[in-house]
Length: 112
Length: 112
Image (cartoon, rainbow over all chains, first blue to last red; front, side, top):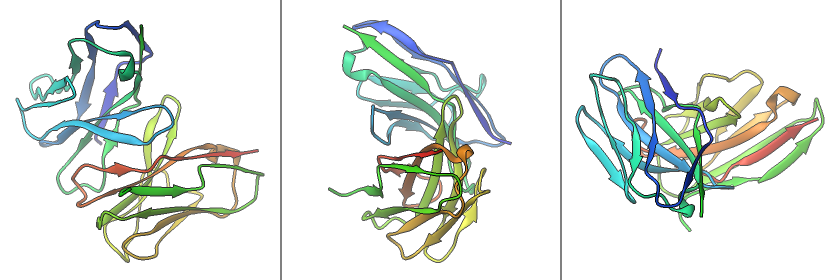
């Protein structure tokens, strides 16, 4: 079946550091890929998505590129802020499937 | 504010008690979902409803029942709560099954 694997956290960075959160997936066909973010005490929010190979999703300074050859969708940001502290979830969805498949989440802590 | 509203936000139950988690969306979305979030396991799908009047089991349906009362409302019922059902529960909705989801803020449930 479909699955998503994320790097374990927490990831602790200083403000203005470069961020990478790794995500790889296993799926048949050509899924759509997503990054969701969960701020403390809130539900998940869509951060960005990509629907086909080599697409780059971007939002709020975050980027991720759909790499079919490596089955990856790593999240990056050039300069993190304290306000980026949250849990980040990678997810995929196959066309015609019932719902998203989520990874286990990676907690990011950004220190001033 | 438009979005997904879940109630209650917090609940403590004793083993064997029953309760219903309520969810309503005002986005005119067709699809609605119930997920549970457990440490290290990400989000797992309990039940979903592709449209009004239909419901289907997800990855972890045992011990739960759902009702899609109308297009807006999708409730989750625990008939006889067990400690293994201690979790954070999220309701979500989406326009179509393979599009981005909008999440509620969650219900933290403890079963003693």
